[in-house]
Length: 475
Image (cartoon, rainbow, N blue to C red; front, side, top):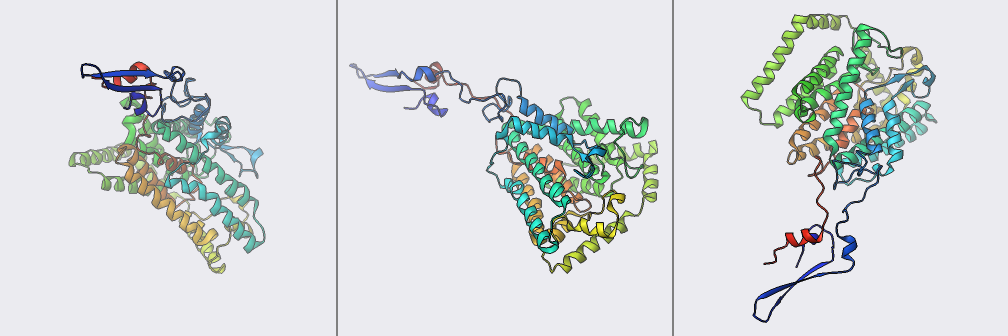
């Protein structure tokens, strides 16, 4: 006969045996083994202060010491993700850009190395095979050129290991019930750093390392305005679908949404606008939106247009669009040149980093700001890594969509937020090199949750003798 302890998956040493007495009625004997005294009342899950949170206590990821030092460092890294530092002493080492969030993430991994662990999920194939695909690209570079460029080794290959770490560590904490908390901290970071960057951009110049290639466009604390636009687009989609869960206060989520939407508008990034619009259409297509919902969305868009016209922002934005440098023809030339190089390789690919090396031979890239990579993720992967790179991008495009669509069965709002965010990055990748955008890998990591893992739940009570007897019907 099973006891409550056995139902919980723990052997507590309680044995209940029913025997007839002399009057023919049932009699129950309870026997407690000697070993059970040491086990009764002991917690079911043991954790250290630095360990990764388990499902038993997801709301307290690292035991009794608050949220744990490693998890707090990880959240700090997420908060710092939108921040990039331009330091002259790092020029030539990491392209002069130092993401402090990566350093904090490394510290979190050192304190909790178990956060980098194997996760049984289809999306786990993406971070695992990313270094393999890039290693194939370096092999192609050796075959085609006879060497691997320092940029390919340092920035592309070793830099990809940071992306792998972001994805796997995020998945580990998300599967412990911290997905909503991670998104809350990231959105908060996007809003806070946008305000700081705007003050430096328009009010007072107090950040010496923060410069923009186009003074009329806002890029937050990032140096590529189009990359910043994609990140703000993701933040807008997340706040749209999960604002009520991320912030209990209506005022707080309204302010966060207004800041991220304004920052997105100020980027003047046409690709980001298209990506957000595509995500909105996809989410409306997969949800059963009522006429009332559609009317509310239309009213919101109308209100934004009215505010834009009233403040003069819309007119100024149209003028800035008209006065922007002709970057479209330049991008077309880069794409044509890259495809010609691919054709000359007989379809094998020119190797990782070779496309940038070719522009070094044609232009002085150090004087051009290093922006001579083809602005299309699919074309870049095809040209440098042939069908292997293109097949990897196809998997990166399709697998998260399939997973998030199935996720709607157990966490609808999180699934829709991640699906929309993935669509933003996927569409934006047609105009930027999006593979190395950290928020995309964070999204993929968050999508690795299973039913019952996306939300924090209370730990089951520890088995005791009294509870075992109460859970069992002795009558």
